[in-house]
Length: 292
Image (cartoon, one colour):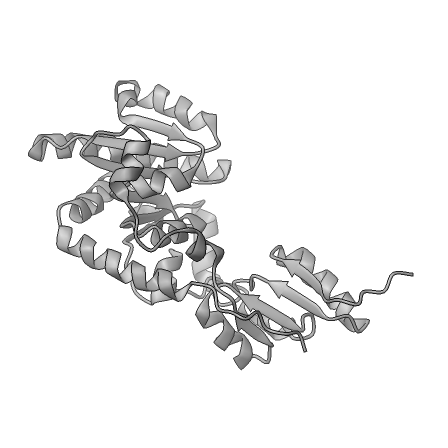
């Protein structure tokens, strides 16, 4: 018979780990769960079950600790790992040099981290990039390099198929952490990439499309409880990153938002300052709490 003398620590994957933690807690074994489920965004009633499953919930975002404690869950904010990994000051020129980029403007494009997301975002974002490149060149002769960090080779195939004449303006990488620091702007599908972009202090346009029927049910059933789609906007309670959702996701709208950002340096400077404060608020808090 194996007896656990130390707490069981489950990391993320709440559907799996919380079920294990619940059974262990019933047997008197201390349980710790790392990364609070996003109950504040959807399926909010889940929070009422957490105290019966875990002895301690460790949170990545400051506001989660307060919300969990209000619902009777022993919790502690410990900081987000990206906040310590990424420096507060980003050397954009050094990042551009490391990638041998000489163009005036660098824009990172992230249409999705799952294949089913690509079909809703990739073609529109590539079309927006083409329009944006032409507009920047026509208006003031600025050159642009687009970086696409992706694990999906079909994205490059799509670009070859639809925009063969634009290939020299693109760079494909397998690591977003190399692309984003070199960028003046990020255009990304809503998701964890928006947080990475925020911690790198990059102005960002957030887009998101899904099947029309799915979007309809989300709205009618009021499943999503947050006002915004991008995590930095949710955390700050305001739209620091412009959002284009569902029918708003068009190449023309993306281009317009991008030009508004690229042509107004004072707005960009303020966004960067706000993101520095957000980054600082995510940094780790020590010591790590004891399980009681």
